[in-house]
Length: 318
Ligand code: GLU
Image 1 (tube, helix red, strand yellow):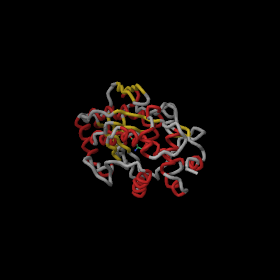
Image 2 (cartoon, protein in one colour):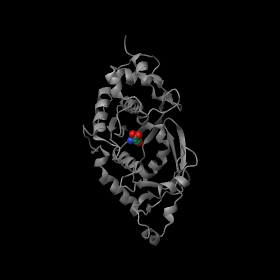
Image 3 (cartoon, helix red, strand yellow):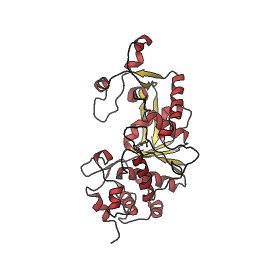
Image 4 (cartoon, helix red, strand yellow):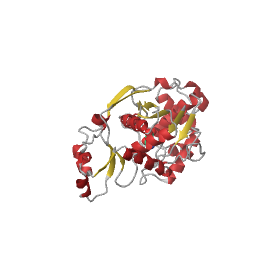
């Protein structure tokens, strides 16, 4: 088994990240597999070296050690996406050779106008620029983004947590961007290339990425890889139902650490909130590996307390 944790260094590690990292780590350790740490920093504007260094430091402090990664190396290096642009360029070439790639000149406002009718739904591109002729393209003086043209094919897969899934590429996903107009490679492309090239067999990540999976499976197959098994885990929410994320200033590992909260207390708290353990107490890392039952993960979001540092503090031995 080869699992991976693939954080984006756009902020300090927050509890939502820790929850996913803990589950990736548990899944791999329980199966005596290999855990890959991959830094997903293709968003050059938002990614910072300081956050990358902090991520590695915070994960090590938590004790969620990886076997391959930017600092320890490994057979699939480099493990930092900004150092893998050559692989993405090759993948784009493959798509180009298969006549699946085309330039898209649509403005953001046009995309919004034809896009998702309901909040939270995937915005399905209407294929406008696919139908442009060469002479029409030449008449447009604008740097395009690049889209991949998807077939009318239904991708069916069984998610290890959410069960059977299916999505029709043309109807549910639409032609999607693989390289943005500003030159950045898109997440769907980079993640598929990397999961394939790194021989990942198990992808465990937040449920917010479930709708990306059909596109990734399709790309992986196109590049000649066997797609991994997928496990989309519930998200952490506050009692009002809001997702904890760094954008909403979710509490960070660093903040908890300076408040004197231990790594075991943080991890045990999350394991308890997620009902992976039945006793409300501090577990050691090896006890968590022995005890946590990942088959108990269900569909519902995991509710954590409002005053997290206080709730975690309750786990500390008195
Ligand atoms: N880099 C993504 C994130 O931090 C995760 C991508 C993935 O697991 O596929 O949200």
